[in-house]
Amino acid sequence: KILSNEEIRTIITALGCGVGNEDFNPEKLRYHRIIIMTDADVDGSHIRTLLLTFFYRQMKYLAENSHIYIAQPPLFKVKRGKDERYLKDESHFEDFLFDSAESGINVFAKGKKTAVQGKDLIVLLKKISKFQRWLGKLAKRGKNPAIVCGAAHDENLNHETLEDKNMALKFIESMKAHMKALHSNMPSPEFELVKDDEHGTYSVKCRVKENGVAHESIIDSAFVSSSEFVEVRSLAKGLRDAGEPPFKIKSSETEVTVATYKELMNYVLELGKKGLSVQRYKGLGEMNPSQLWETTMDPEKRLLLQVKIEDMVEANEVFSTLMGDAVEPRREFIEKHALEVSNLDI
Image (tube, rainbow, N blue to C red; front, side, top):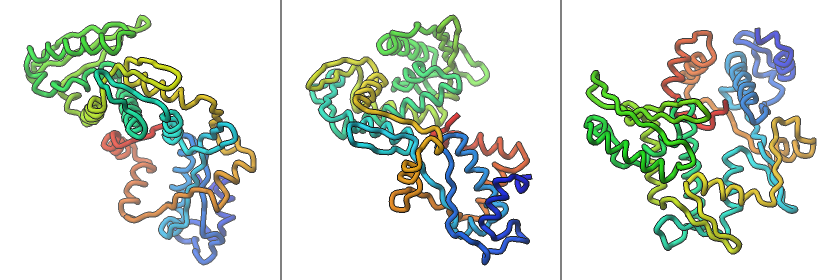
């Protein structure tokens, strides 16, 4: 079916080496550097995956001999005054804003007389950003970010906490105090302690009603022991070690107090955007010819990733699993590796 696609047939004709195990002739290959250029979004990633699958299945020689490259077009163009630069993705854009804003800023955590500044401030901001991304992942699974944040910052919460009724009740009181101190702008959650007779433990149901709709997050032994929560808790400890909110932000012009880690990060990001012109490219077609040359095609400046296959057996298994017709192996693969995913664009 794919061989009937007009664009694919154009690629086959341009390369001149034939297609398939029987008709492919590497001696007739006209080009030894095949560069895949797609948009820097989810649609572009999907097209790139399909092209890589086509080359692997129908022109495996190209993949085995590292003739395939992937262009890295920028997602952002930023301009401040006469200074222009291109930034690859959201992460690089965020890092640029942190770097732009940190100069001249002193951040004082609660009870601290020594300011966090310079490189130490950037490290803290990146930790906050990573922490927020993990909260976002768990939010997609039905966990309220504020509830998860409170649980992650409770150093006493563990599997044993939920085996003892009194300890579980103390955890609920700790959560109430956390929510009141750091999330007073949201409706107060309702907490309910529920006995799990099958496992001999307790679970805590946390209900938050917003805009007339109630959302329930459950903190139980399975969640506390999960790799996601272990990662979030580790990040939370790193944040506490750097300093706890509220934060006082001082510069030569202003002094502002923010109540949470997220507010600190957002404040600095807004500072970084001052005087900045930002253009986000939805696709390569939005660039004019000179921009496309400068960012993606100029051999002196462009960034290319070379596709290499070091383990052919494993590569064949992965391609067959993810791009094959059988649904069950693909579902099992996704469930097994879901927590390893980063930068997921949905």
